[in-house]
Length: 358
Ligand code: F0G
Image 1: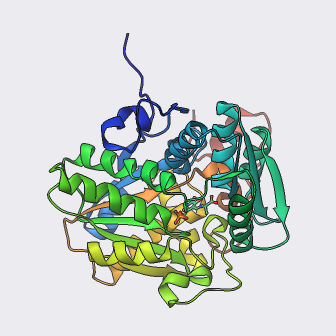
Image 2: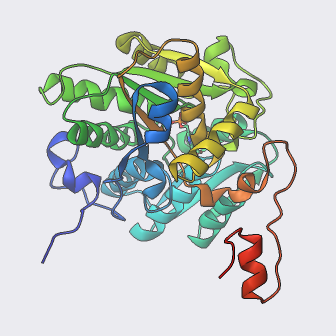
Image 3: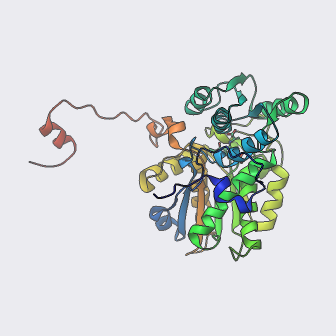
């Protein structure tokens, strides 16, 4: 019988900070596809691959960090975990906590998280509170609660999260045989940017890779504190997952940028949505808007002449399109997409489809 993928803690046990005493809480995360994207290669002249993290059990990359954070929390005897979230972390924390038989409390900005993510957290039995503030307010409170009450923090300020998330870089190196030249990634708290840099650095140190990729991170223009170099008090973007004005891993991200000859850029919402359409319609990968910023960032840097022909480029797309599907039903001009309605009539339908005569 073929053995199935065992989740990142078991697959990479020798490269992670776990011991025999660590109870492994897994839903089979990781092992996500690295998909060649000929349409993006044709547009840019680079060799473009997409790391599709929407294929994780709860539909986002957060599961890689959450298997680690919840396993460690259980190892340390935690009965309850807490996180602040723009949606995906809460969905993941809720699923892994309930699988482990412990409680997840989640704080989300009221009315600001995608319906799919809200549904996931509730379905998985989280104590979900909608806070009348933004994500940054939620994170401040979650940190406060973890410091003063018997509840374990599973946001990416918890190093276990970054530790688990670095496994995505291991997978990229395994498939390509080396690190890529460039790695493009969305940035909110900058935890994942930091995690990939750690994974690639570890692969370089042990000789699995011969170089580090240049790490290119992108924030939405209305929510770009790292690019601007200052906290954004009222971050705003349609990419709700990365609507963050005071990133938790800001300092680590700047160190990672400097270590990799990296870059941070800001992308307007209109370009995020255009990239979302290109990825869905030309490559066949459906993501949530925040994830499409990797594609938008590549197109922008390519147009700026910053991506040499033939360079190997990996784009991480972080969350599944089904979490926040409404954007696909909006046309490029902003109008609603209304699928054509037809009667039960083969000939008429053939006509509408332009199939000619039978
Ligand atoms: N993409 C998606 C889909 C996300 O949900 C997030 C973060 C990011 C990118 C950015 O990753 O924070 O490591 O830089 N979502 C967090 C959450 C904030 O609560 O789900 P980062």
